Image 1 (cartoon, helix red, strand yellow):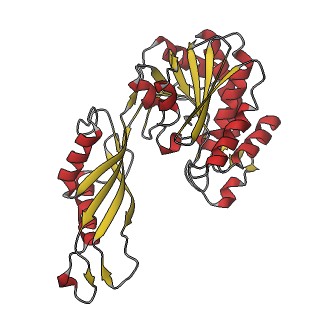
Image 2 (tube, one colour):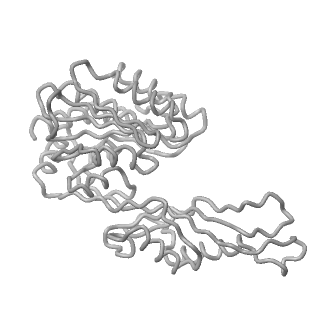
Image 3 (cartoon, helix red, strand yellow):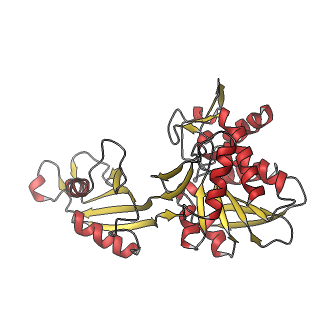
Length: 356
């Protein structure tokens, strides 16, 4: 455990955000260095995002793929200074999901000499996964079943909501702020459009399994306070369950048309990921639940609100589940990994891989 914590602290200290390609590569090389020699390493790169697939030599179809992402969302510099307090390891990526990646790597290193399994390491999950997991799938990488090490406290996530990243744009007419009647304020238009969107998809006061909308940013090119803005944009994150047919099964163009109708302004879908689903009654899920129970957990099935790279495997016809250790605060200032869950998590992975 001491060795794992030391390596986890080193990895957390790498600021591997999407805008730092050198740090993405550094994080990937750090984890690859944890794997003993003798395994094949297939390297990929798409749009500047590196990834790798590690596997036994001569094996091209894998019984199980262990999937881990090494990128993190931006954070203040202090969050890249990991610290241990009691049973908690704090730092950006501790929970999502650098510590789990190291546990998966350790388990792979131990068992892959005798099993047809692969370790999939990617560096773009936080920005959609198109250049990591999806790119590898497009290049022919296949498996029978995928375990993604995202946080779950040893519960098995068989369903996740889909996502749409959308930019709303409004245009108006510029004018001097002292004479607003001579212009048309695009910022007011975009705020009203966002209001209509939130009226259709109101923010819930508690956990719900339905479509939700997050307004991440509203902006205008204005650089002067005494000018009526002639253009404004809003950056929107939509999460939707499979039951919402306004999004599920729709193309990006169809989703954009739907949101334009709702808001009254132009909509552009910048990223679209459909919901992830794995058969909860499958042989593999049953074995994974049994493995969780064997280390003292309940093997509970879970539907998760956040999207992960499992949706890319779902689109390829491969069942993928999220199964990871415990912790809390992902994407927040107090993110931490629960160190007490790491040994049972690793042992559950070992038990599952041997049984399957």
